[in-house]
Image (cartoon, rainbow, N blue to C red):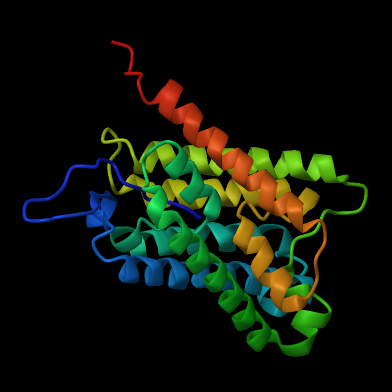
Length: 259
């Protein structure tokens, strides 16, 4: 999370600043509104995903034994789809530092706006985790750690780092391709991005918990006070996101369909 970014730096008539983005977003014209959207969007993403994961961990009926292998990845994917559709036209709906930094490295997002986005995303993640705590109370925090990510037994830190980098590469590659390329229909972006996140959590969930987003990991860890190899979830997704953004920008975006 993810997601829609600036397709072009052209300015609209009468606009003195800001770059034109997908869904009518205009980065820099109103950074207060964009940052607020990132905060709220990230809070919704973290709340929606971690609440379902916490319910599964506690064997609650909404995500009990029959559903816990599917519920969490689908919840994260569906909530990201909704967030992209809801705030994409305001902030670009990055809701993920790996997305913001990947876009900045490839010149699709101004570096001067990066700090505001990163702070908003982290604060939103903490608020989302607090919402999960409110929903499930002490058992959610003490027993399920608010769905804080951690490598599963037998998974080493380097393996965890590699897995988080790989799944975030997939997510950010899809985001960059569908949200920054004029050849892709706007309506495709939310569905594709939500599906990509679901796939990432399906793949990484049994190995690292499937953060695919530094603040999705840090928010619950901060609120639950449960830190386990936190640097894996910071470094892995950021590296994967930047590599994906550069790969698409330098190699894939310049290609045309064969005639």
